[in-house]
Length: 424
Image 1 (cartoon, rainbow, N blue to C red):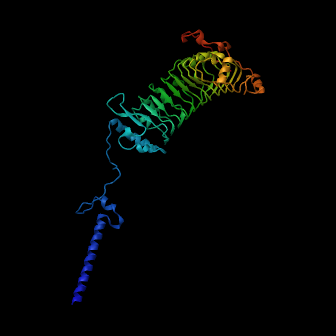
Image 2 (cartoon, one colour):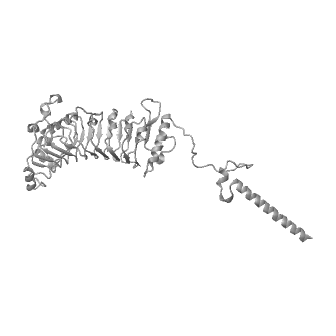
Image 3 (tube, one colour):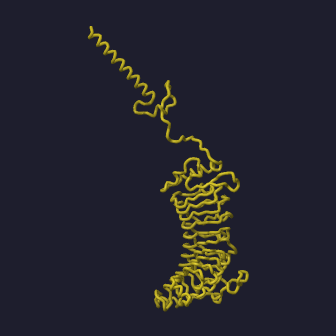
């Protein structure tokens, strides 16, 4: 009898356990923890369980999260910045990792300030991407869509394309630096319609074609367009300019140095014309650059004598005419310039230097190597010099090369009518 009772209890126990396990499996499938799928039940909003699931909160931001901005102007540019971010193909320094959230003023490279039309507002006022090494196919839809931008500096990146004509609508932009990138196409004419622009730097790019003469009469303090592929004669119809720093080097500027350009640029502090294709003689009007500290026209095809009027450039510290076709004597009055630190006349065909110039040679200030000066070392061979002088070169108005306007006419209004621009 006891054996029968024990057997019945065992059968009952097995049946209850099986039923309980089946119910547990069913519950697991309903909740979502069965079959190895832990997240299904937590994300299923349509379950009918009589209890609340204890699911972890998501760790990623919700797609429909509402961003709160410090100013409506920041809210307007946020999608513009994010779209530009999506176009960036390379960011080796991880700059764009900071371009997240509503605090645009904390984005690396972005700077906020009060716009001129509303001192209580906050807006993106300047951008400094210098040296960020970012790559993007274009700035279109970004730079031209920042309505309050005043400064845009983006040198040493890998931006390409051309500049949108819409940048002319940026009423506050006064500094534009896109140097050392991969921009191409013609000169960005849109800048001609930006009267507030005072600083333009587009050097070390791949711009081609001509440079509009109007750019030289803009309200610019600095114009840097060197190291592109521009090809044009320097304009000879410039009457006035505000430019203090002008670099046209390493392009394909050709033709003579126009005499009018020196009077127009009389306030220039720095002039870089090296490695172009300039020809002809140097007009005496170069002496009108009384504020110039640096004048560099090395590695061109300028010829003739050095004009004595260079003595009027009393602020000169660096003067470079190396690598041209200049000849004659080096003027002593040039070597007497009090602030001169570097005078490079190497790779020409000068035949004589006076005692003052020889003092500068001893001091390491004057370089006249590879000329035709008989008693100095490191000169051209006799045959090379003889071959050069076998083909005479003449400059018109030779009287002007001994003319020193500042000695006789202290004020510019007394300077006589300019001589025609010499040619070879």
